Figure 1: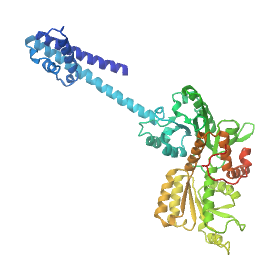
Figure 2: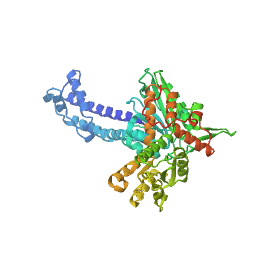
Figure 3: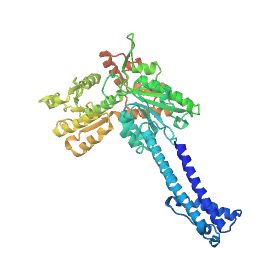
Figure 4: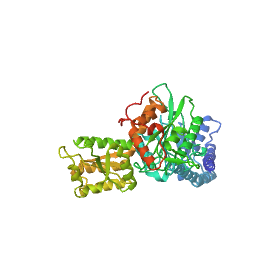
Length: 527
């Protein structure tokens, strides 16, 4: 259809030029100017071309005017008379008709085609069918499933350097519109659910040398592929089953992306780093009854190179906050044999049970937050030690969604239930929940004790640190060893709770760790 439209347009232009040439030839003949003269041939050509657009509005650039424009004497052009004038008028009318009925219609059609092409391009961007521009060095491929909280944070921080792969474009349309300049720049790729392991899912995606991340040592380069297996807004779930992106999806996608890179990337001096973010205690059972965890699958079956536990860094951040706030409160603690208390506001019995069991090894007793409003509860805690200063009372707010967590926190603040605490941690999964809490803390004296932890920010920081270590040249094995060391106590608690709930054992490296909690993920791993 496009070829046909272009052909009709060219034929229309050619028809107008031919009619103009016949007109011009008649004028030159009437003026006794031979066409064999080069100047007269140039005048005729100029006359034909200069009347293409004027013909669309029934206008003609006269021969004398054209002659003057190229430096010829216009007085040599004789006016037409009699039958020659009638013939010229008929030719001009035919030229006007051709221009208005065919040329203009073809111009409008070409404009319509260009508009449709632009709309198709925007539609392809909106639905993840347009490959990204080749204008950026170092991209990280991120498998996101239907939604990914951490990817929203990563896009905000690193922009186009993070290239997400989503299943459902309609679920992320606002994110796509924001980072694609309103559907003018490709920023993600779409793959149908359960099609990750098919070649057709990525056959139109071009992965070239500019995507590779350059290491600071040995001059090697990396193609980094990450997979977010975390269920949306489930930072405190334990041994949860991935309901969005699964390890099978990620494993198949890693395989096809590696195959696609072998076809497209010219350099051979590179390796692929596959990183999985997920619940390492997620359980898989075979038909014969054998059980193994996500960690066992990733590291044992080599379905990826690294696994980053999604819950351990969040719990470690919570423990750091608790120890800091509790230490600021003076005496009490566990020195006199009492257990430290954390008042937990939540709407999920599962979250409450999980956190209560997970914090037992850290000598923290999790109590229903709404009991803090009952008569004598906080007073009993404050009077537990008559000779030392009363221990601080700390609270935690975390509901099943970020919206519920934010709304409940603001409601409890207005009700005055949070003012009695020395410190309150608000745990949210989406960064959108941070600003309302911070604004309330700034404006309301009853909320000055509020602090926030965002699980997606914690995950993004840790994935970034893994990329930094990889760029520095550390091997996946050494990075995994460092991650296990940093989160050893938390991973041990997770394994203990999972086993007590009938979940499979974690891998030996994490389950047997007895190291103290070491706190910074910013320190490089041991070489």
